Image (cartoon, rainbow, N blue to C red):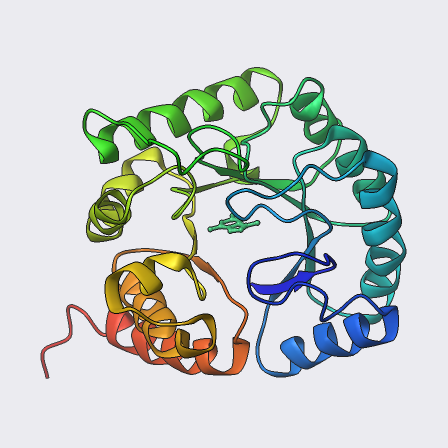
Amino acid sequence: MGILNLTPDSFSDGGRWLKSDDALRHAAQMVEQGAALIDVGGESTRPGAAIVPETEELDRVVPIIEQLVQRLDVVISVDTMKPVVMRAALAAGVSMVNDVNALRAPGAVEAVAASKAAVCLMHMQGVPRSMQAAPQYGDVVADVRATLAERMQVCAKAGISLDRMLIDPGIGFGKTLAQNLTLLAHLDDFAVLGVPLLLGVSRKSLFGQLLGLKLHERLLPSVVVAALAVGKGAAIVRAHDVAETVLALKTAHAIRDNRGHNK
Ligand code: 9MG
């Protein structure tokens, strides 16, 4: 899943794709490099990010989504927490909603239920503005899994079938470095929920905390973790650096698919 941030303030590529021609060209390039999905976002979810007014988010994402749906033969997904934006993006042709808030906003579940689109339910403790202040869990893996299971149940009750759902433990969303590492070490524990796992680690601050790396130095650990995640069952990896991530994932897939053969 290639990331297309149409935001002035995203943590790693804020402001880079504000001109529509640049955004469309970048999306096409990610597809050429092997992305099977493009995730279009108009509001930064980085820690401390400000809330973007609905109209502004709509203006940022809808015209680009309309173009991408016409031009690219891949899944276009919208990264938003707002039901109004979900509905407009669905009307513009997205086939997936990626919600870091797991459809908690009033009307979000209904917006997705009224469509045929898939939904990624991501775990977040708190809200982006303050989520890194003091994240607290008993057993982080069990707690995140239980919350995702509960969100899946809410969606199922509203008529969203299991085959439309994906889950994501939300690395960096209301988690300390130790909690992020524990989740990454236990990704296979999410398989019991019975839906595909999506993971986003690309250029995230855990690499700054763990290795002292600046943003532009985080490519290598990002692709290493992407490959490890595939080994632990991840179906989709959300990435800025698509070409490099695709190479890592192809290698990880070849190894994973070879398990059980011993000749
Ligand atoms: C929008 N966004 C930023 N980080 C993300 C992550 O890790 N997962 C998903 N699903 N979306 C994310």
